[in-house]
Length: 234
Picture 1 (cartoon, rainbow, N blue to C red):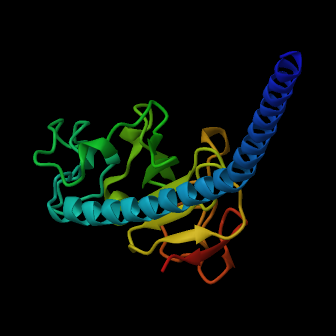
Picture 2 (picture 1 turned 180 degrees about the horizontal axis):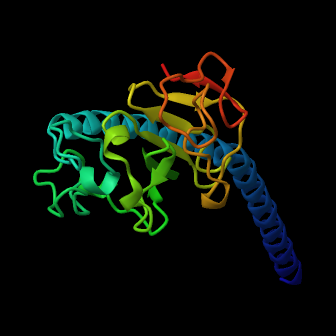
């Protein structure tokens, strides 16, 4: 009988040992899978974010043309429509010319929620739209600067930029579009967050710093005003 009890204890001990080993194996496998899956997930998320950003900028470009052609803002009364800010396009903020709200909007209302510094957040990216003042300088969508938008210049130019909220986690490339409707992106710059925001005309060439009143885009690896290389988005 004593021998049988001893054998039972040995069997139970071995079973406990096997269980512990199995647990260690399972944990090891989970760790290995996590080291593979997490980077792949982040990479997939970045790809999805950047695809959504490109689609968003195309929507902004289309909305700007509809807005200008509809002459919803004509501050100087010359019957030429002007480009609008994201809040105006989406019917969230009052139109500059008359204080009314655009109904129906030409852009989804979700685009119009801009903070006090003119930044909007979507798809892990920060967006900022600029309209020009009398000197052609890009004016952000801020209450303190909207009043300086020049009607004549705003009928011809705008720029919209999107860059990662956290570089390397929510995205890599910075994207730029203006009145020409072509999207370009950075090759190697690392814009990240609102404190590292790109300048209003970062992807233009042949104009002074900050001036968006121009049509020459940096493409094909050309260096833009910000000193970084840009290429077209296909």
